[in-house]
Image 1 (cartoon, rainbow, N blue to C red):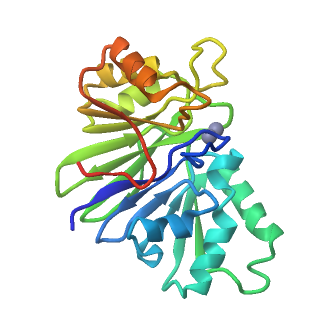
Image 2 (image 1 turned 135 degrees about the vertical axis):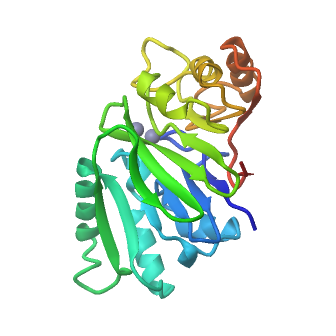
Length: 258
Ligand SMILES: [Zn+2]
Ligand SMILES: [Zn+2]
């Protein structure tokens, strides 16, 4: 089986009928990595035919509720499932601190009710290499959001291709440099107003960014057909932004190979 990314949730901070809070997983025979953690992480992994115990860990992009609230449940579920070894949690300083406090609040560690966990603090430096193994490399770079946030890059060594996930961000040069020449860009598209954007991106801006980065495929995420705009309109906006490659709105349990 080749490596792939699977969308576990594709929605905005407020879920809608079709899309839960945004999270994704890099699935690899060499042990994958969860990126952000909604409340249904364990079950969604099963639905995606991924053994949760095969994961190496989770990378949390920032500490907004919709991206981290499921972590205590995941560590508890992995303990119940007898996760072998130590589960790695990667995040920037403020996110790691909040994640640990979340887990502490449920007294999981005191009661021995979580899998063995290693906490890894990520610096806010450009193109920081988080993890590299034979099959793939993961790196992060800071983007612009209302709290410190890291975009994520995955280099698939087998296919010699790159995927970038923007995380929550307003359009920024840091992300564009990070995603330059990538095969696939999974970019947030939460809002439609580029001025009152609450540090988020519009579908048209995502299209402009994808065009400037020269990616082959753009998938919009952190999107709601109900709260953002209808999907067809969003894709028309991506085209208006000048992107001519493969464009779609991410759906739960959809997977992308590079
Ligand atoms: Zn969010
Ligand atoms: Zn956010």
